[in-house]
Length: 382
Image (spheres, rainbow, N blue to C red):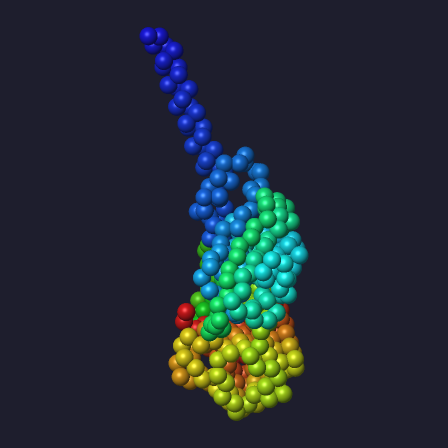
């Protein structure tokens, strides 16, 4: 036996193993969604460093199954990585009944998620096919390798209205795109976040930066304060949360209504059962309004214009109803006048203003700014 040749072979094999291990450390795995441990993600990690991976669909709702699903279901998919929302439209994400009948709806994408919301309840006892075409691309411009389709069958029932999925925006008591201001002293239980605006748009809080530079603190906040200009991973997490907030707004706005134009927009003094309420106008709460239902019931209020609570008007929950299951979606400004109180999650297309002594047991999620005046905000328990 040639001992020198044998030792050289062993040394060569050892070097190859070390080289492969070292490359594995530098390639990394996608952490942009629940597919980080998916087999497809593992496979894509073997590509050359710096080469974008091919996105895949790793989860769908409803599942690809013949078990009956509710008539008011929403259809969504989760990818292995963040996608380019401009490539996910009603052309590239479609829903059909039977073989070829198209279902009208709206498509919204953010991060690794895409949502198809039908314009009306789905037909009963029918087979539907959802398809995402290969024209859908990742944020790095890489298209799906092939179109992805799944089928599901509806039953006869309309399920209890599903909650609006807030995603990571639900981690915040206040989340905005253009700033948070307060007239001290306000009291906030929960985290605050602003993005893409900088921390300079958070005013009146006397912020104290944490040594990590990832968040700051305030005597008015029982929680942490985050801004897009803070150290990583804060900017990336805020980008995801803002995207989730916008997805939630679209989801809430597109739910088929059970009741329309109730009270011509004046709901003061009413007792409201669970369901989806929709107005093409603004909504005024001049006196107390009561939401009566159980801990699993859901209320969604779709408001095309402003939402205004008069001074000292209250939203009251009875029967076990929970604020986490209440969603106020407003395309116009939301105003809580002096001493007013609201329960639930406020999803505003524009600004939210809380006047002196007003309060919310819920969340303020605004696509512009939130202003507070000696206000109290408490994030509800999940």
